[in-house]
Length: 120
Image (tube, rainbow, N blue to C red):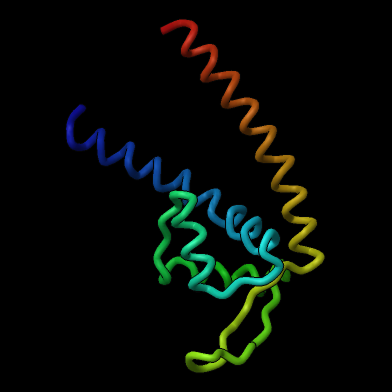
């Protein structure tokens, strides 16, 4: 594979991850009930979804503006107050919708992959 093709595939891979990041963040926060930004980054990394703060903050702000997340400020024992994010009712509804969408897409891709593997 030449360098240009490899770069194109890496870009496609990055876009695939980027497209699912919002869903992953909603799932993490919903499972934890509330999360601080550094905890979100740690959990994403545990699941092999490496994200930098510069990507996460704008996404959290957008999800907040869209009404899918809310936040509260809580005092910290080791510094200034921290902003903890939690899922709103609309966020829970979004998770249900995205779960159905993901399962449908996953089933379609699995079918295509199985067909490909049977023929190659």
